[in-house]
Image 1: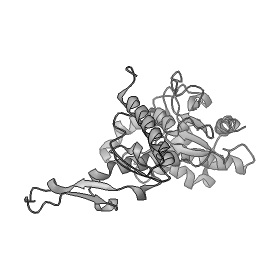
Image 2: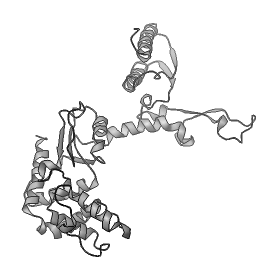
Image 3: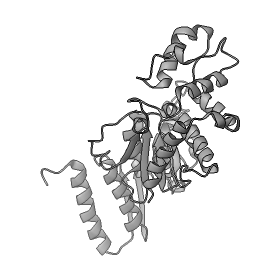
Image 4: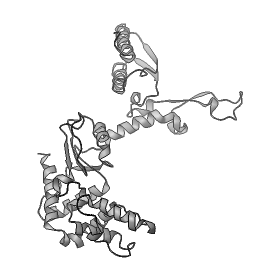
Length: 322
């Protein structure tokens, strides 16, 4: 036991003591002060589960905590928020201090007092955001727009679109991939696939054996985003359409620095050098929105190579489901 952590020693000792008390079969009230203090987050959840399961019949348990892992988000009606209001403001005199108060309604307390509740709810929500068993993680909203629009277009023409069983979830960037996978957990009931705009080192334990693809896998460019699945001329036309009221003259391929980098980066570089002074900021979501709104008019301009690239993406992703 000497090499064990303080949390493990306390937890083990508590279990041994509790087992002895339970064998006595007498009424028991447990008052625990910060029982999770030296426990890891997962151990705290184990302790909470133990208290709920083993103490549910015939026992009363009251414990204090500042840890979100010791708050059951599905039983918030059993939570009481305790506040010391004696130092709330400097205007209180010795005779007017209200002292410690207990609230059943969290809306009546200060924001600082409900941080453990916010943490518990946030943790629960992160696991409930994706009810679908099949989650496709992408960089951002533009990816979702282009993939869904092209999928619908290909499906209507009898070609392979994205399987409707996929739930597309924007991650906010490849730098959030690790956090996303960690929040999703090792859930055997879910298929998790990521389609990102750059290759990711898959050597880490978290990413090993995961389905992680890059748009470069489906493009002729070494660096690619979803926009690079389109022909450059077509994507530039989407930018011109989205910003027609703001541009003095349309953009063209001559304004780009070449295909060695993502086309969005090339346009952003031109934008920064030539259009920023006019107060116009480039938002990569606007061309996507324009495409979705005018797809019926623009579908005749989409090249067969573009269709084949998107169809390859959809087929690879759909194969994961089989």
